[in-house]
Image (cartoon, rainbow, N blue to C red; front, side, top):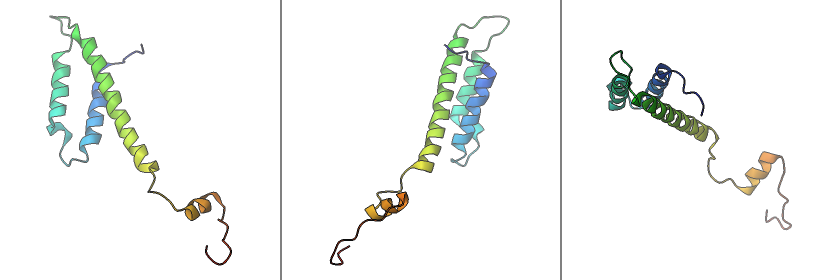
Length: 110
């Protein structure tokens, strides 16, 4: 299993993805329930001098997995917008894209 890295780095990545996602909504990302839940969960599962939280690694793994999901979904949407086809093309247009011309039928039918 790959190393997870720092929990702070994961938290910052999650907040960055929330900022990207809420940029389209028109309201600040700090006002969203997702932001408040993530910050509260990270605060509740931190290690203090009084206790050792066993669930911290579990929370960190789930957060890293969710970060990967958010980032992949955003990148997929960007690739889809850039490379998605604009509908079906006519045979003449496709032939023109690759540098060919379609043959004409005798009698002026094509």
